[in-house]
Image (cartoon, rainbow, N blue to C red; front, side, top):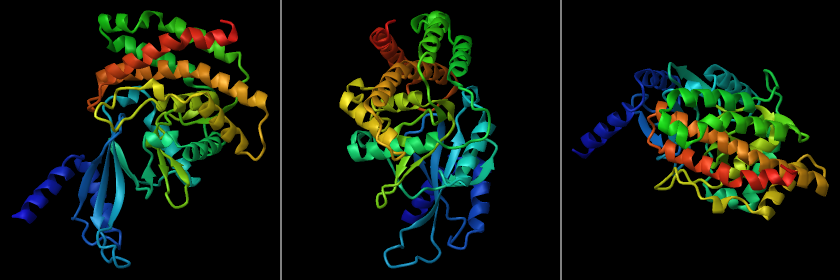
Length: 355
């Protein structure tokens, strides 16, 4: 009876992913010598994803290598693309980025694709938590890893994408929103806000690099023994100002996507001046040279201004997601908080440069 109930639960979990994904998983497992039974598939949903649905798929090992490994499994990650997310990015371009990163030893390997998703290598490391971002040691490692990421040589045009992305997402949001929503979020004046930011930030001396653009804690994994980091999930990655990427990472410190209310942001957790300075010093010094005070301060000022762009990006993302994605997340309230933070901080941040 117990075995029968366990079997029924396993079958129900397996049915939560598309049939094409199940077929691919069985084909992959059949070719692995260390899998005891390719039909003994277990599927476990993973929390924290807001663009896609993510699962761990696993099978019992055929022959544990040592005592104590009986409970170990062969594991892969299954990513089922969210409904309607093609409005945010080019999926084929994202897969090309994924494959390029994999070839260069950054991130997991692509194991296979199905019509609305893919199967990836499962990284045997711990996903960071919200609290980890405040750990000085881990934060310094993130800064160094992010500098390495920004210096990657990636195929494709190296033009800055952020402003076109904002305008395209604004157009999509306007097309999806009823008039009361558009009025609440001041979408009618948003084109002007984007132009003001683009004009203001283009005056800065900008360093352009390959940016992740979504460096929240769930997209960073750490090997507990070696302390090495792996940055994953490149849906929004593109070339852009590195100050924007760091600003976006700082803004993500306000979030805890594994809490009971994952859409609620706490901006008291935004890094203070000492934390921001330490991060920037770690970032700039990772190349082996000690940065001078002026370079550190200039980058910090640029980062603060780019937090405004981050609020607009994810505010628009939230509005659009509310209309196209059925993942259990209060996208609209999330968008509301990002826009509120934009209007709250805009004057004080831009006044630093005389506006």
